[in-house]
Amino acid sequence: MPDALASQVAAGEVVERPASVVKELVENCLDAGAKEVRVESQRGGVAMIKVSDDGCGMSRDDAVLSLERHATSKLMDKEGLTSIKTLGFRGEALPSIASVSRFRLVSCEHGAVEGTEVTVEGGKLREVREAGAPPGTTVEVRDLFYNIPARRKFLRSEPTEAAHIDYQVRLHALACPEARMIHRKDGRTALDVVATNDRRVRIGDLFGRDLLPKIQEIPLVEYPGMSVGGHLLPPEDARKSRRGQYLFLNGRPVDDRVVWRALEEGFRGALPAGRHPVAWLWLEMDSLLVDVNVHPAKREVRFHRPAELRGLILEAVERALRGGRRERGDLKERRTEPGAGGRPQEVGKGSGERCEQGPQVEKGETGTEQVGVRPRNEREAVAVKGEPVAPARGWQAEVQEELVAAVKAPAAPAFRIVGVLDRSYLVLEASDGLVLLEGEAARERILYERFLAGAEKGVAESQGLLVPVLLELEARDADVALRNAENFREAGMEVESFGGVTVQLRSVPALLNDADPKALLLDLVDELVQSAEGRVAKSLTFEKFAGELAKVGARGERCRMESAQGLLDQLFACDLPYCTPDGRPTLVQYSSSELRRKFGRSH
Ligand code: ADP
Ligand code: MG
Image (cartoon, rainbow, N blue to C red; front, side):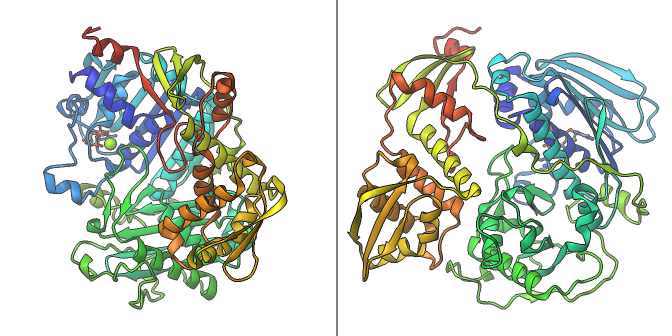
């Protein structure tokens, strides 16, 4: 067996929570060409997650091999890393999951007489035996993190974890409509959507068929090396959060701010304040223009041409909103393979402004269409081609609007506050080892979420200044400040022109009323000017603005014993307590085993 410890370390990256297990397992099913994927979960996936498929299955040798670290069948050479075609590619998921759970894999190749069952417990191989099984693969994961109590402690409440699983299943259901997707949650069918080759049908099955008449087609817009298409809802259906926004890059669900910002910019003027458009975007991009390997578990990617990407999205959204020319059928399958559609160096000029080349717009063709835009390997392609589409019937989709939002944050993990280090950190004793909390980072997260919450409710709490502050700024700074006046107002800060380059500050956010108003404004304007977005002659999105404001507001946060518990409570009341808005950790943990190792003890 692989080194169980190395796998546990890798598990820290790959397996953040039960939903990450679901993500990895479902991706493997889809990579294996499954036409039906069944996910079962119990108690938020903490007790049990079981994912079965009717994909290609594995031989006995492959089944055992799949639990070795880096034993991927999907990455043959180093070049492979730059042109990843399947969802999984690191060969780390199965061993990582198996190292932190009681794990059972049953797999059978099509046409094989017998299947194989492999059992692993906490990374230790227990048994490999023959087993009768239908063709395909089933992986069962019980008692996640049973052998790492500290990690288990970090899990949120069962309903929260369950909501994350729901979300993950729905994401994959959207990404791959040609597979039937079933989710049974604590013995109940939470989702069952039939296979289809029409994304709109899948969207309707997942989000409610009553939406279908309102859904607007985003016509396929192409730039060299990239193209986007999809669907969106008109501005009046915008939501209070971004949870209605889905982005698939070459078939993988991803999350990216450049795209979300561009999407909202495209709607500009049409959106009610504090609302976010609902959209499903399928982005295809030459693999040379994007790093998908940024983070193994998170859905982050790094685009090398953000300016062109922004232009592409803006163009697509504007066309969809303007035209309303509803093309029949869905997007024609379109790949932007390297070499096809222009070399990357031809793409735009990287100027930060909209790409000047006119986009080529796909004609409203309605030829045969395939939504399987997720690149598949040959075997899968053969399996899918020409498959009749199951009629839309007997579906039962539990639409859980805003599911994650509805779930209340549970209490903070039990920490004993040991003390304060260097006025900057809280030293905490956890059930397994030592945790350090960075005061500034924690405050930044807290402020950020509060600013957003305030803006969503439309009631930013504000503290009027007895004497308004007048500030004479440099022309560029004054410009940035006034451009963002609306953002300031949403955060509870009234900033207005006082003639020329003088601005007047009349109130500050109640959350920051200890701050020196003048310094606050100057620091914030500095941040805004420095941020890439600040240089573009438009105002920032409120999220971005709130992030900058939180950063400035948290600056100089001092940790004190008296307020330590309060800080912890506030942090764990947040949606995402573990990192700042721009992704730095708020907490760092040193497990007991790590400490023992550092002191030269092997166990
Ligand atoms: P990766 O997906 O990065 O290759 P994983 O650890 O997720 O790594 O899986 C390891 C290997 O196990 C895969 O490359 C694949 O060959 C095999 N495998 C995993 N799950 C399945 C499945 N559901 N059906 C068929 N093969 C699978
Ligand atoms: Mg995988």
